[in-house]
Length: 239
Image 1 (cartoon, one colour):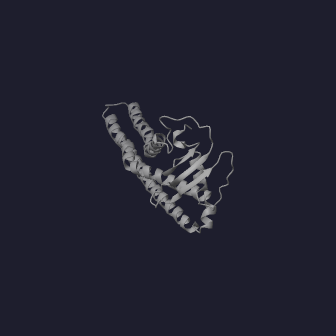
Image 2 (cartoon, helix red, strand yellow):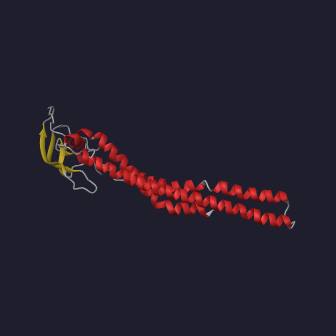
């Protein structure tokens, strides 16, 4: 009985991790689809996105079927072992009772102890089956907490300058894409905005307006070039 939970964990340890990854990928894909539905429609990419969603969904279902197969096998094995243990207890107990080695009340107690042991241990298999998924989720959280920020704080920050003139000098930025070629959202952008002036940034979807705003707010740093305020690089200022 003690081996069954361990066997469940060994059989499902990789499946739980893959199931967590597939579930996360599908959730992110759906979120990207809902948020960017307008852009997908404008650029005629809805069919491509639908194909990606279908592929991610099929992979998740495949992993779920695999895990449920393991669960069914483990539960069947557990009930089989429990039944065999009960029959063995009865077989030895009845023989011992017939030879007056134990009392009938002791036989009843022995059978109940065996049955109770299996009743306690068998539900532990579901805990071991969830262990790999929990570990994968915990590792992902640890990766996020330990990740270096895209815009780290300067070791020796300088004071905020009195001038508020904003200068964007040859700024380029490309998002990191997994499995796809990275394309610059901004490339060689140069712009000077005098102090107390107003400038409107216009452009079609995907032209880099949101990327530029995130760089100005220093949610991330440029891959090339720099942004200065009063002649001081934003990377030298403390947030």
